Amino acid sequence: MAAEYSCSSSSSSSNLRITVEKNPSESRLSELDIKCWPKWGCSPGKYQLKFDAEETCYLLKGRVKAYPKGSSEFVEFGAGDLVTIPKGLSCTWDVSIAVDKHYKFESS
Image 1: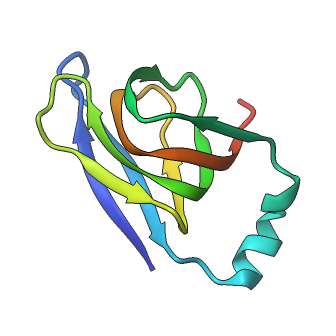
Image 2: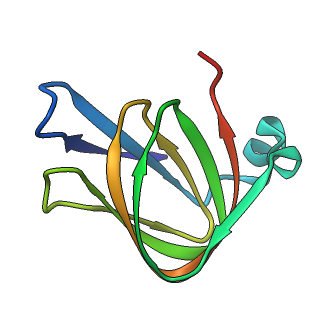
């Protein structure tokens, strides 16, 4: 079941939500064809990111705290999580364990 987190941006009145689905089933992963998605990784550190399109990603490795711009609250996700990040979200990724993920951007 997906957990939904509300992330407000100080520059916008709309709420942008990062959705984290913990340990999705193998059938769900194959339905999404995740193994065919491109891969991306990064080492531990802090990264300023802006999502110009909705991204869905599946973390193979890693641990991330995502802090939406202008907020001290964060959403945490890691290996085995299926994460949806909304278009328009600016956030800081605080990566404590190096990330290796499959990802897909929604075409607008």
